[in-house]
Image (cartoon, rainbow, N blue to C red; front, side, top):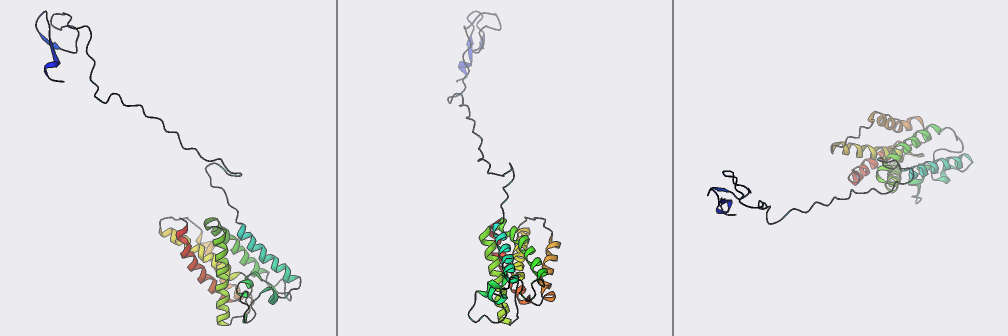
Length: 256
């Protein structure tokens, strides 16, 4: 709008008055019937914003609490523990430890024993002598196996158990350290894998505030089992712990 159009001349007194008034402020003469509409711009009034529909959450699963992730049961860990207990019952019934897969001497082609020995924890001659080693190993498997399984899945946890047992069995055969019975090597593999993942997470700034003192106590008990039981090989523990440390570093980036 030009500057000339901002004023009109009152016909009664000849004064210039604003075009947006209907009466002359000087003489009171009516200059127009109604004030012109204000120019609100060429675009007109903006369209009202459409309210976005809030995102909807899926239906809660069975036994799921709102706001809390559903608890997953460590079925793989339970299967490993039950398999070790079942093998112990079979051994108590009279089946020899060698027939069950114990590493009593060089396998000579029976390489399946490099894993099978971890499920054999006792002998028919002294069925209750190895209860302490069996209890300590399976408790460690239950604790660290379940935590790894919840974080990385059943397949990863079982793979760490079996690879840790195989690494311990291979080191026992390489160093001729016999006999070798029990899951202490596999348990140490699970423990060290969990520990390495926990420490790498802390380096990334994800401090999970875990009780590392309790972890150290369990690791010490597993490492000292060969001193308390001659059927437990120290080489199995060393090999399992080393394999678990490597596997823990490999799986750490998979879940953050």
